[in-house]
Length: 415
Image 1 (cartoon, helix red, strand yellow):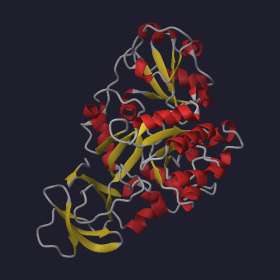
Image 2 (cartoon, rainbow, N blue to C red; image 1 turned 120 degrees about the vertical axis):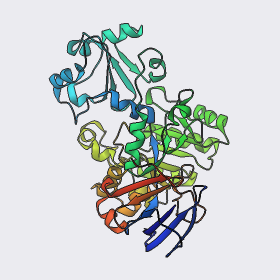
Image 3 (cartoon, one colour; image 1 turned 135 degrees about the horizontal axis):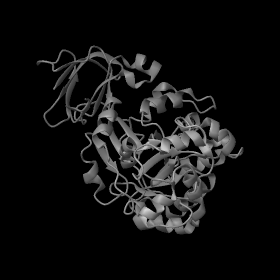
């Protein structure tokens, strides 16, 4: 494949030849041969890589009812949303937050919908709420609040159709050529399930790193966490840290176990300023979600402790301290659009904003080294994102509308 007249790393009017092995063969001006693609002066970038996403949950969204604050307001709105479909059929709802209609449990859901099995997932992804009909159908009892029970529920509720083809097509239109699936306990055969996607795939727990999920209610002592880390060495770990105490326990554990190349902090939702040098000393990478303070700003203003609010999802301060930084969408628990994440990172008004160039780099890293920006050079895989416009113009809007096509190994994946 020969692509003519593209901008590569700020150099306009270049041609790019891709070999039959799916790698870039040469880059230059007026390369011989017949062009298959006229770039029309648009920028050619490495394809975007989403460094933290939950693919099966995202694929199940098409078969789910969205009941978050952006879609539903109040008990009446929630009731109407949960009554979609025919009586007796399961309803799977996602994205719920207490600001919609308060705390949920079995009784609260029964008061809304009692004539069909209903399960509602909290926006965090950590909690499911089931009404009485759903509990009976699944052979369960209790108050209908199931914390971190996805693996158990998988065997008790009807399977949900995973529209992976749709997911892959949409991601391609966004310029995404790779994913890192961040489930803490990947289902058996997950890689085979996801093989239908045209994007390149890293599955935590199957591929490095090993995901370690922490919750405050079951938080291990630092020594116990250090033992878990040592048990998987020499593989790097990716530790889920969404609270101050989770981060502190993780840093103590990695200090005791000894860090390894590739160790990551996932989310880094609360990083107190005094811990930043510690993170740097351990050589950790932070894979964060800079869009959450923007998407969830109203809820964070009332729900997050005032002592933690200045430390939410740091970006600029980490980069200035030399901390390796990358980003993932965390979809479906956040937007699946990396360009929206970039806009949020560049537009924050809390002192943590980044330049548009730095925001773009959050998604240009290699899967195994998220902060090593992939470059378009001879011999590199031809995983490409072709834009309609030069890079400077694209950085001015940071929008998926600028994406013209995406390629994996030189093969077009854009519908």
